[in-house]
Amino acid sequence: MPQAERKEGKDAKLYFNPQSNEFWYEYVNIPLPDEDRIAQLEKENAELKKSNLDTQEAVLQLYEMVTGPLT
Image (cartoon, rainbow, N blue to C red):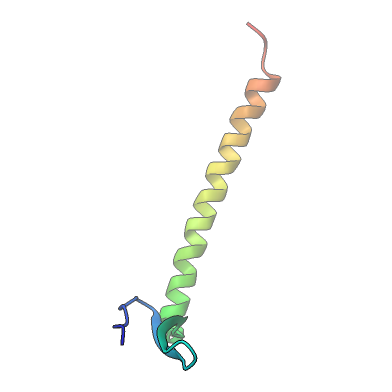
């Protein structure tokens, strides 16, 4: 029988196929406690805001390049 891998935030569910005598694991998410989930969402939100600002700045630079005077 195979050993389950340890994956952070995942739980290994063992399955067996009796026709082929094959075992395997499927990994499912373990729900986080509310405090951890909120902290994770706040971190993701901050990262998305920074990414959005970076994208807006890149668009502005392209706009200035396209609309700027030709030299």
